[in-house]
Image (cartoon, rainbow, N blue to C red; front, side, top):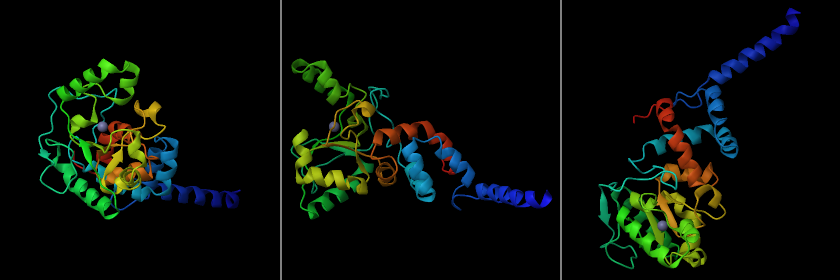
Length: 263
Ligand SMILES: [Zn+2]
């Protein structure tokens, strides 16, 4: 009896040891805790995270270092106050960017990656024309009121956020080129779809995600979320910025404690 039990006990002990080992020396997650954490993620995300736990945690730690507001969930259910205005807006003119009009502004924190992305696209033969950038609550309200004069509400709701619910108010979202479906099939549209994530930018409303995001496919609308978060979205969240930002909003506090990141 004893002889037959011994290997089983040994196996159980080994399994226990393995699950108590840290996933990575940098973080306090044990393998067992990480498996439990992964089980709370959407199933496809969980499979990818379990396949590369160390990379997943490294990118999460990077995302936790993003400047204030950069990963804030702003969608149909989560809004910003009328007075919410970024404090570090900067004018886009005066540099090498392609701009169809004056007065476009974005948060300073997004500028380094925007310029790097624009340069890289240019090198590959694509020109990124920035047609719209930061919008105040009032500008968004005016745009929506104007759209509602000529279009049915159901159509406007699929394309234009209510004031307080636009990512443009964050000062980290841009619309490119024609701001319509023809953008997808331009050199810039194809380049952005394939490469924006490498520069921390992410397509907010991808094709066939309307049930998730509340908006129809907008091939021209990108939000800067920083390079670690954009890589997470691309590699682990099936290109769903919405899914990632919802997960982040629900998990940020716990992750900070677990990954020993200051708030
Ligand atoms: Zn937009």
